Length: 283
Ligand code: C5P
Image 1: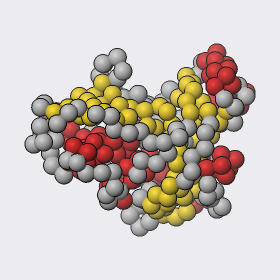
Image 2: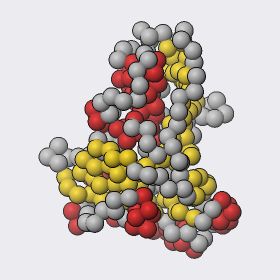
Image 3: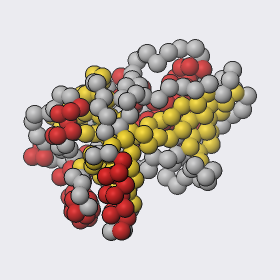
Image 4: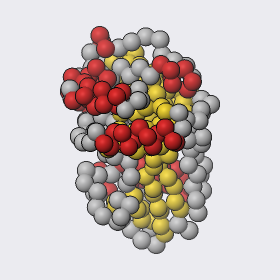
């Protein structure tokens, strides 16, 4: 075997409608998801064992489990291999760049990338039972489908690929994390709305996220952050269960100017772009 590398991109919910709540407590969604350039990196190596989690400088990453059975990348890898990575004589390095508990899908993307690497390790393709991967995380089926854009329904397991659209975005990283279960638990049927957009272009103009009212109740300071983004010349939206805010802007120059205005206001912001395609495995 030879080493295999794969990027695990973050996602944005360009629009997210909650359409119901199941008896098991999970919410049924109708969401337009896109992949962005910001990505974690996974490296699967032969002839060693265990899991290493590092930041780009090689330092430990607070908030990401290093115990293999608690780590989503490892759990995805195990599912893709259909065996313990230790038995397959493979070790995994996860380089984290996507903020944790941020609404960017980092953990789910790591799980899907681990699954894709595990499949490749045993010469299987990316096709397979993506919906079953929702037991690892509701967004894992979307990432496992390896499509740049999709309309996602059910609790996240029904993935209909869409034509991606090019676009520059800025991300605003609030100085706190939000728990997905807590935000979902705080949502009320009065927050839910009808009329989900069906394509990426429609979602770009729609921008409704039914989790925003719950997120604002849990973190009222989101209102102040959104006002600062608006004052910097961009229209803020929430991705997933937050707290990351994003805005679609008119190209890299405009992104740089909004990012520097936000930095002057004391906010951490970065520029990124919607991806034209999912990442491919590099050998
Ligand atoms: O599966 P995932 O880890 O992404 O979800 C975390 C929690 O968020 C779930 O346990 C559930 O409480 C909530 N959730 C939900 N409906 C969804 C996805 C997640 O209620 N469609």
